Length: 69
Image (cartoon, rainbow, N blue to C red; front, side, top):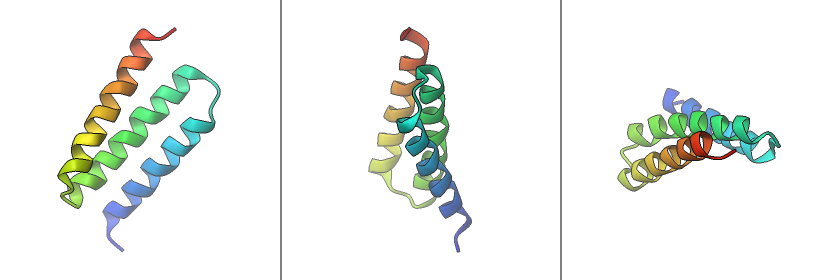
């Protein structure tokens, strides 16, 4: 098994848990962490559209973490 698949699985689990989390700040942090793991996975498979998507997702989650109350 490709070790980068583990990064993808962890990212998916973190984002899935973030959806279920009720605490807004924790949710955003889980989105960022999951997005970073999925970014590593997408770089490993050289999926450029997915790389761009993950970067935008991470920036949006960071923005939400910083500016939402």
